[in-house]
Image 1 (cartoon, rainbow, N blue to C red):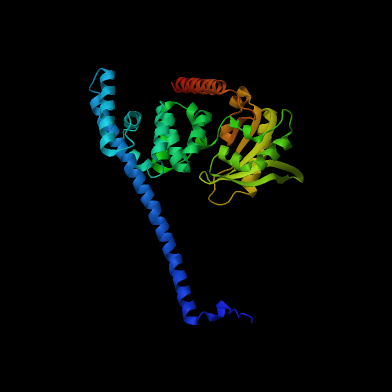
Image 2: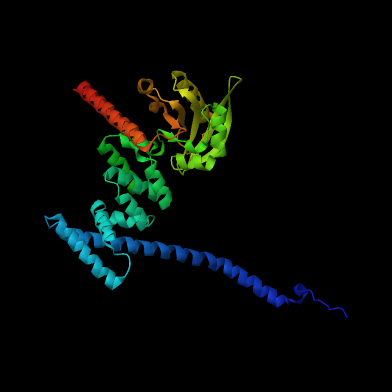
Length: 367
């Protein structure tokens, strides 16, 4: 005897279908409410944890500063650690308390701490508190907040010496402070915080000998990692962008759009040393983009010439930045960390010395 299997869909009554439909609509409305509540709870919990650690660090630091003997202060911290661990459990080791003290020392404004803690977790603050230079700490704190870096990304940016590779590190201290304040209070990002020099492209996996086409293809193949190196606000638009001027065809290697700067970014790839003719070519691209591609409300396009080697005197004499053009080197193989650090610190020192000379010349001219 055959078993008769009923079609379940025909057994559902119309009233039940209406109930299911209503429940589904309500669920669609409720789901984002729950998710938003969870997100707020995570933010609130993180803020409470960060502020608690800041207050603990500040309270201990006030007393320790009153003791001239550093050894006595360390004994106090060790004793506090034992007592807090017995009473409250994990999280209050001697090293943890010293991290809180360092945190309170480097981040003395509670309002700034509260604002940053909406995006940065305690692990972020621990990582940033390990940086001794104040401007560098402010740079990483604000960029981390703005671009919502994970702790892994933050560590990668610090290890890759992002701060030293941006133009803001080469500016006079007071000017750099002014720009960082505008970033903190107004979310105002400048090109000097966006563009790097050099760009680290070791992830492209290029051989010793390669062409411009190989470089471009490798960038597109590893586009996600290239965008991470460029910065999170870059959006890819086109490769080999065709530009027609007087019936002549030109091809721009890569075209991007930067969301916060609100402008097109043209990238031209060069295998060798920067040449004076590269400026004219990029100027042509930028003026064409300004005329044919720029939309209402956007800023003027910016050009980035990526080359294997810069020509410092050429770049200085040609005053490229006045025309919205930047030149940067790229490294397809990373040198040892100490070599890279030395190179970047020398570049920063040289840039600051040149700025000081120009400032002196302007003063003499006015006088």
